[in-house]
Amino acid sequence: MTGVGFLTVARRLPALIGHAVRLAWRASPRDTAATIALSVLGGVFTAFGLLATTGVLQALFSAGPTPDRVRAALPSLLLVGAAAALRTGLEAGAGWAQSRLEPQVSRIAEKQLYELTSRVDLIRFDDPEFHDALERARMRGVSMVDSVVDSAIDLLTGLIGIGAAAGVLGILHPVLLPLLLLAVLPDAWAAVRSARMRYTMMYTLIPVRRRKWILTGLMAARETAAEVRSFTMRRFLTRLYDAVSGAEQEAVLAVARRQAVARIIGEALGGLGTAIVYLALGVLLAIGAVPLAVAGTAVLAIRSGQTSLANLMFSTNRLYEEGLYFTDFLDFCDKARARRGPARSLEAPQAFQRITVDDVTFNYPGKEEPALDHVSIHLDRGEVVALVGENGSGKTTLSKIIAGLYDPGDGQVLWDEVDIRQVDHEELRRHIAVIAQDHTRWPLTAKDNICMGLEKGVEALHSSAEVAGADQVIAELPQGYRTLLDRRFKDGHEPSGGQWQRIAVARGFYRDAPLLICDEPTAALDARAEHALFERIRRHADGRTVLLITHRLASVRYADRIYVLDHGKVVEQGTHDDLMALDGIYADLYTIQASAYDPAYARKESPTKI
Image 1: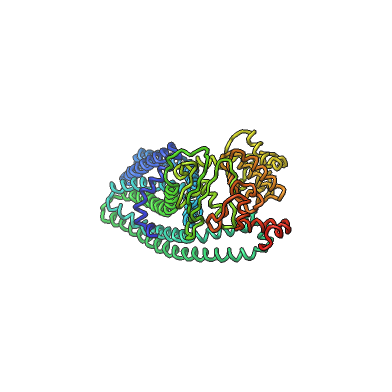
Image 2 (image 1 turned 90 degrees about the horizontal axis):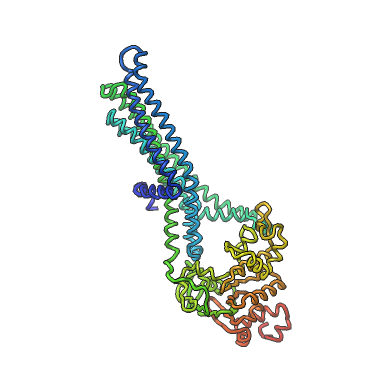
């Protein structure tokens, strides 16, 4: 919080305005130029109207019959009216151009943010500090971008208005100008202090509010609704929500009290400053320093200057407060760009004869114990290679490193002789297909859930669905491939868990990549469907390499090679027969699973283990 003092942020205001104007220019050069130009012209006609008012008052306050004085004032009065009409028209035009900018700026900022969040290294999503920074940028930062642009333009308009009033007051009497500051500076101080209190509160409450949002999601989401009721969790979740929201409420009320005190002091000092301004004007009139007509114009100029200066301070305060959140957005974007990693200079290989994982070590953020500890394996073209082991042994982490989703801390992954850390990972992933247990159920059509943005033609779509058994699922959908797979929307349809699994498998087959990673692909399938799927994978794998991760060891019997992981290390490797003969972890796990289906197998194969 040392970076959010007023003077610090005031020094950053020009940079913030520069960022805001550049964003506005990217969104619409025409509307940005129109807003600024029309605001400047509006200020010019404000000054012109004030100066013309002096001529009106001089004519009206001069000696002679009233009709003559009115006729003498008419030319100046017409100029005042014309200036007012033009100023009003220009301000309306500037407001229209500014209102057009808002949605365009919001769109540009949101696109910038989500392009970065979808490109940042996957490992960042395992870092709590990244999540807090993302929440600040996403929940308040990006929503403030259009407001920052508005405030920057309003600040410019306020400066132009002050310039107009200051020019007129400087011509009328220089003493009047500095007195204006007395009327608005106390309010400005109170507003800035209040903004800093509010931002400090928002900054410290981010983790609390993130937990609150998670709890509200648990109580209101369709995915959790059944378990909330099955386990009668309503009171428990409500108690947790009350505790979190109560802490948030206490913090908000404490800040509200301090803000109220600051506002009262600011308004009291501001009223005193206004009284001093008008007292000074009265003294100047009494001693004859200014004539009555000039004093009348000065009153109007003072009111105009007060309004413009108040608008300026309000805009400055808004820009200061919103700039704090806008800075969160800018900082997150800068850090996200930096976290995309160095430029990858080599072209991604499209195929391989061998993938080699050489002495790879990997730690998750904040974890001292490595998830992978000096792991070395290889996958040859056309092989079916299995990774087995108990939960937490590092199987999925290793598959993500092979897929280029994580970079190893030490060691390397080679496609033939190419270190994949040196290639464009996005291009590399185009040659890798993943079938995951925790696949995403996209709220898209059945076709889009399989194609995932790729367009390879209807034949490839139907072929991949048939190989995965998803064609039977899609045949039962009311609109076939055009059916929206989300019941939260009108005419949406929700497949079962096993049906979703087949669609996810079709998604992997559709990619038609040289490397197919299957991470528990049969978790939601019954025994018959599981057997059929593995048969399809074996047939589909002709000429391709399959990396299979599963707890169901009957499915890996025919793998070309099996690696057994335990606490992040490869402890066994070989074929099914090799590992059964070794009588180690794999044999133990296989025997336990086999005995669950056939107790006679346990007695025949390994009576001591049962």
